[in-house]
Length: 363
Image 1 (tube, rainbow, N blue to C red):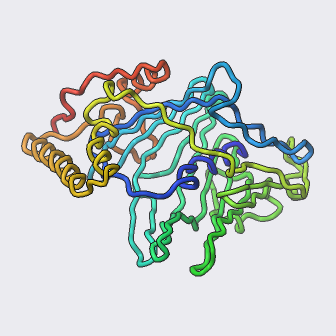
Image 2 (image 1 turned 60 degrees about the horizontal axis):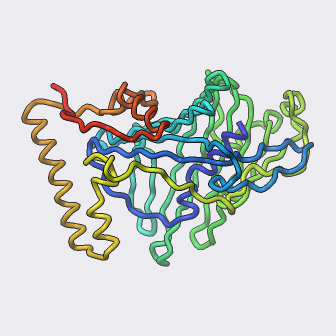
């Protein structure tokens, strides 16, 4: 569970290291794919009785012959409401992550509040090499702040739940709310404990009885996060745990940077692939031709409206190419045979895809 918690604090690294920006409004059927290549593993999380972990190596420049390749595929499966399905896979390590992305944003005067939509049930990670353990992570509410000062930043003030029904372990991470006039503290506190998947009662770290706590978590989610093993009844009886007041490092965010994406070359990208679809808009923005960028964007959006009207007139509905359905009540997308093949090909650095002749079926 601690390794999964460490991943959680790194997954939004681009928002910690970069400035928030407004994305394009995805078109129905638009998709994006890429690989990442990692040349170094993060050090194991040590127990309090062991030496502290070493600083994390640079994942791009470590001396390792065969890099670990991670493939990512996402497709806009619904436009009303806007929903995207995504799938991340690392076959060499037996890792799969998947989910549906849908957010809702509301302007509240001094900030924009961003929450998960109804179809966004969180992130689901499967560890195939550990008997298909599945870890479910919920997304916290967040805010985009700094409009009045002209220095925008993201803050989080909610509780994240990470659950694994197979191991019956649960982590609750509380992002502590910041005061309006205070500086960003980025404080996070949390606990890991045994839970009953059929009778889960606790939703905040403070709700968990102290004698049930296996691990206590504390730190700055934009800097360093630590854990300790308390002298609780649960920790004393849990195999492999040794109570200690010594803090141990889970993750040090400071030296980490996002790993560059490896995307298909321009000639291998299809017309509805994100970078190609919006390339002229991006180029105009980079060149500060904002009026032209707006016109190109409006033309793309009008073509999408025309296609939607054509489907409606022909009594047809859009059918995703890479995912079985636009949404799923479980929050877990499933791949179509084309989606499975696309990911397998990406692992072999084969980015070739044939254009899709028809993206709709009879209603």
